[in-house]
Image 1: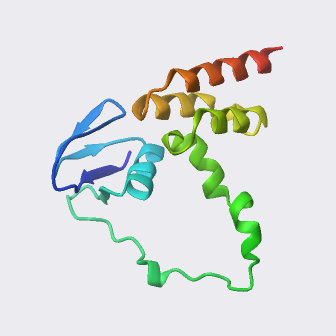
Image 2: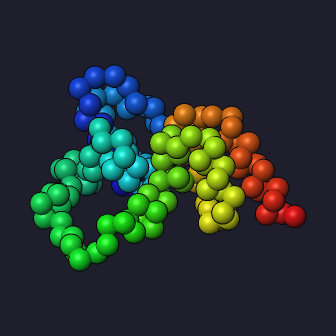
Length: 137
């Protein structure tokens, strides 16, 4: 499991059963680490020696400019996966709509855990339960 460091100037951040205060490091599951570093932004990866892992700078990332930008919005897998990895960025009706597609059936438990670590909304748990019941039919 990767180790992350909380880099915010103040406050606490609680997720996945771990509470972080500024400067704290903790070992978390890979999916949660990706969410904390990429989506939350107040976290950075740390290797086993306590040194920060070097990630590519935005300028180092190349993009194929010939790619049609109109396709990016709905077909971007990063956007779709954030329903599971970052449910707090979506409304309950948006999550319900995504679950109805059946695309996330193999990831319902991950969604539940990430919702529990985030906003902890009963409506999301209900949507997961409804989808599980539909699958069993």
